[in-house]
Amino acid sequence: SEGVGVLGISQGGHIAPMVEELVPDLAFAVNLSGSAVPIEQQLELELTNTLREDGWPRFLVPLVRPIAIRTVKNRRPEWWRKNGKLDPIPHWRSLDAPALVVYGAEDEQDNVPVKRSVERLRSVAAGKKRGIDIVVYPDSGHALYAPGTTRIREDFLQTLVRWIRSATAATASRTPPP
Image 1 (cartoon, helix red, strand yellow):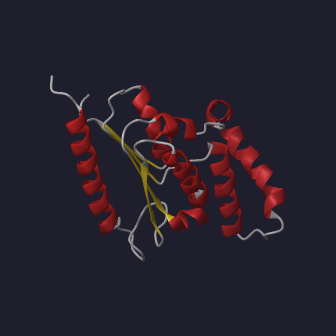
Image 2 (spheres, helix red, strand yellow):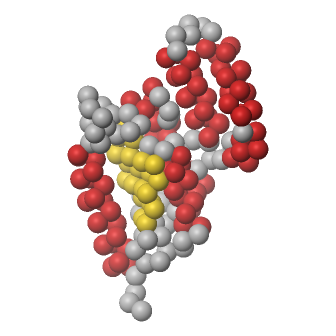
Image 3 (cartoon, helix red, strand yellow):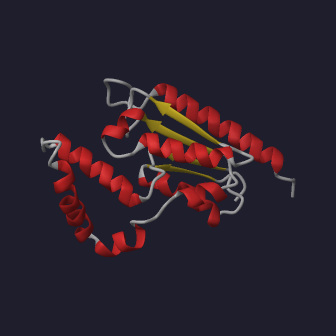
């Protein structure tokens, strides 16, 4: 599987670092808008934002949020029982492949606790011989659209291509010939 990398978007980004357990010589891992907190914590932020967006008064949100969380979890209780506490950080810590994580800062008002995710990933990256490259676009959200459009950011796409080329070149130079 030489040269095989993984690019996960949203929840796929959350689980991207786990792929190395199945593909030991993973060339790279990319996380686009995937949270780096346990799934239940992400759900809490997402529902808080949804309730506020739906017009709930700020003082009522903490009272209504547990009911909203319970409602969501009751739709797929087995899935939440198996996955709700999943924390991606141990997988990021054990990842040997080069890694890139990309967020839109405005996602903090929608799905992903961007600040907390970046903080947790930087903490992991500091202890790794090969760090985790983290890019946060201040004027984009979950979909990484260019500001004021519904088109993916051109600068993000250029960064992604450049980063993957660099990561795969570095991996190829570390791999001994057959």
